[in-house]
Structure formats: C-alpha cells, structure tokens
Length: 167
Image (tube, rainbow, N blue to C red; front, side):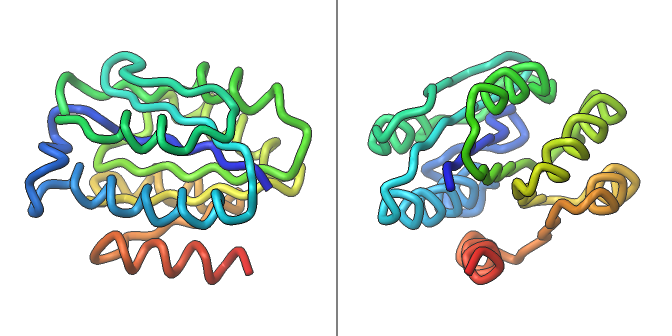
C-alpha cells in the first residue's frame, strides 16, 4: 500500500513548534504514520494546503522530504485541494491509503464525496483526523461512504487507531 498524506496548513492550525497547537499534533500524527509506511517500503506523496497548495511531494520514497515540509507554521485560509488530491491519486494503481489531517471544513463537499466514494469502492482506504469537529454534516457524509473519521484526543491515539485498523 502507498500513502497520500494531506495536511491542513492554514492559519488556524498554528505553529508546528507549539505543543498546544493543532499543527504540532498534525506533525506528530504524520510522523507516526510516515514511520509505518517507510518500514513497509511504500511510496508516499504529500499535499500541504491552506488557501493554496503550500507543499507538494510527488510519489517517492523520500520520507525525509515530507517530514521537512511538515515543519511549518499555519497561515492563510482553508481551501480543500480536491483537484490536487484527484490528480495525485489517479496516477497510482496499487492499493492506496489517504490520510487527511485537518481542523477545518472539507470544502467542495459534493465533489469530494463523489470522488472519495469511487476511490473507496476501488478498495482504497481513507482516514480523516479532525483536530476539531466543526461540521458534523460533512464528517457524516464522508463517513457514510466508508471513510474512517477519527476525533482523537492526540496524535498518538490517532496513529494507534489507524495502524490497528490497517492490520
């Protein structure tokens, strides 16, 4: 299985260096997930987004590049990058896992649900770590099509839930 890691880097995520910030928890969760996929010699792609694509790593085994790009301070608004997610996932043919970490709304909800429905029907996996559940309607729409939605208390709890589910 290969991993697409999608992380919200908007201003509301805060600083990666401040323990109480959402971005800090996102980095910790991401590092845990990355370590697992690195140990299985999987490929990884990464999208960091705010109101634009802030960071992108195409499919590779360069896990340190992804880790480095995660160390950022949040900035800007939030625009869910469904077009970039689609174009990134559509070039892979193996079993895929997408992990999305956010504290905001998933924009373009109808387009996103439609795309992820097909993605999940192809036996891929989608895990979403909501650091703050602001819109249960969106979460339920995504959950209804087979995504795993976690509102974990911290990054370690999220990693444990995802890795346990994948076993």
